Length: 75
Image (cartoon, rainbow, N blue to C red):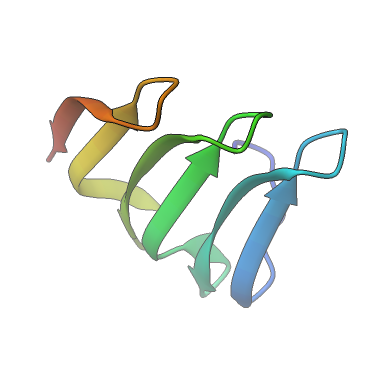
């Protein structure tokens, strides 16, 4: 996401094929709140929370079947 321009409201990013890559809310031009990332096949890749553009709390990474396999605690 470095270099990504964010517009206030709800942000969506797309893969080259048009499928959903990521989405989440933007406040003051930065990611804020719950975000999700997806693989090309539509399965969830990662999810977690931002606070003013900074990752915070628990971030979950999912395996190819969509099941959680790793949880990282952000400070």
